[in-house]
Length: 148
Image (cartoon, rainbow, N blue to C red; front, side):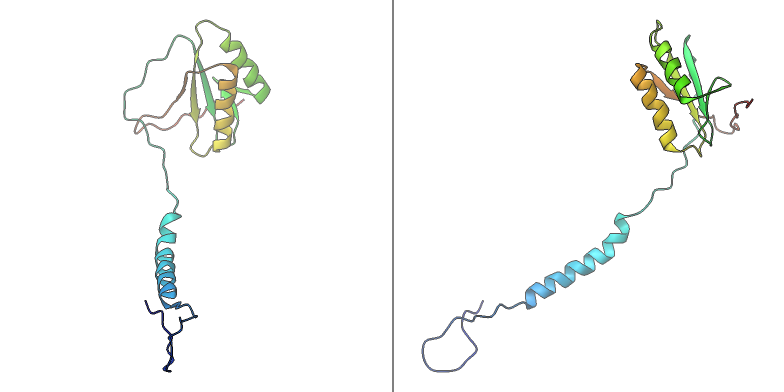
């Protein structure tokens, strides 16, 4: 580091009053190039196809609530279409039963996550804690609940 000036005159040397910004500019340009290269790698979307379950089917419990949610967001209890208020009422009634039933949720691949999250939060608020997701075995077409 040079503390002296560039002038060539006789007498005591004076400290240089300008800041040398060349190293700062070099470092900033290197950082800029690094960020330009790495930024596209940080913002990528992961494409997910929810897998079919190759595991054997689990046995259904004695008391089970079977819910299906179609691609349009309609909720079916067994094969009956129910509204959100009816769903909450059924969950509240089921939570008071002994033993507390399990909730099995089947959702279409095209169902919005918001709708599935609503059903799960409604079950949790009612006091149902055993919730499972039903998947289709490999090679089996999905069954669509009967619409009335």
